[in-house]
Picture 1 (cartoon, rainbow, N blue to C red):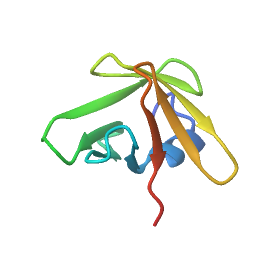
Picture 2 (picture 1 turned 120 degrees about the vertical axis):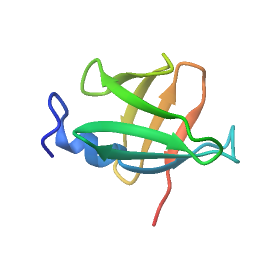
Picture 3 (picture 1 turned 30 degrees about the vertical axis):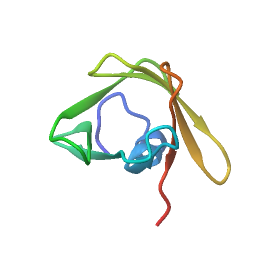
Picture 4 (picture 1 turned 180 degrees about the vertical axis):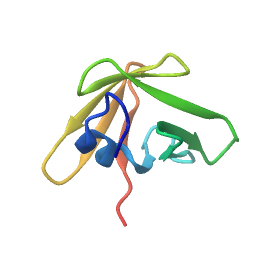
Length: 90
């Protein structure tokens, strides 16, 4: 990946589909486009962007602050609103 300021491991971890038990109807897809790390969900066409603060913390364009928790077999994203996201397998 040639994303400026992005750790390629984190980019690999973030890219894909994410779900949360708190909002089961929502699927958030993270993808790379034009050297930017973007996300959208399955309920609307709004697209947002990730802005990294550190290797494991970032803010999204809707001004939510998130922390990435990398575990051996799965990664989770914790939002400052209390929502926990898990990466969808497969």
